[in-house]
Length: 399
Ligand code: PLP
Image (cartoon, rainbow, N blue to C red; front, side, top):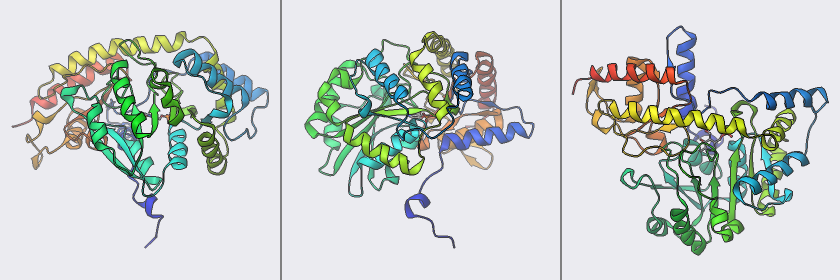
């Protein structure tokens, strides 16, 4: 039998990509599927950004670049961090990567090792734990409560820290819950993190898609966090640039240097044309970002209303950011479908796919098996139709 690398062999496929792929296959075979599975804006990349890529290609920006990105992109990232997050970083402290995912991977792989423990508050994005395990470090999932609005309590964080704990990955607005951690909560958490001297990896990929007042960046609230803090971000969601693959990390030069060396050896550099597009995205007028976020805001209201009207779905917390609803479907568990009872969120997702022809993602891999994740990165028309279909399917379930 083929012997794979132990850590790669243990990797789980991404649940979100797997569901999106299944929805795609069903669609291709002629089934009328509505997908609420993808974590991907349905908008096209703004024209000004595409034009910058065309110009770059025509001008010959088709060669290798420095591993951590071209000088202009690093400068654009530093300017963005100053303008939007009130954070001062030098170009030696930032690294562009092929998507947020690669930035996270290269930072995690550079920082953590066997014997280390990394805390991930859950529900959490499916890839954090897999990326940490790939580094050899152990994952410590730290569940939050729906009744707390999925906010991590400072005292629970303090209790979870052991001598082996070296870091935490924190994401706000959160995929999948849509929870936003406010300034007061961040201040409380910062006290614990400073005391414990943990590496704090703060993932803000949804920072522009937010329906409440945007809290300051945690490293701006508590500047001492910056000494052991890494900013993680991406252009994928804010600029509808998922396919271009541009993300970035900012942090102490030593760590960024190590992550950049790793990148130099594993992918060379982020795509040169996408880097030119990213410079325009970050430096150009930001009206398109605001417009897309505004539309997500309308859908947020629509989806909250429709989900709350679905039999068996509970959504006590209005998502305050990102573009997901993460309803609790525990009332549906035990209902009979096919040969037996529905046992968890993944099965509810299966049921919805088969009976309603709507793709959603089960909550199991997010660390919340009584939930499903519904993305509202699709048109209001699709959303209306999807919720009609789900309501019809659920009404047919037998308790
Ligand atoms: N972080 C979170 C919380 C995400 O949801 C995603 C994508 O779904 C990413 C990071 C990475 O995005 P990308 O690799 O497209 O930049």
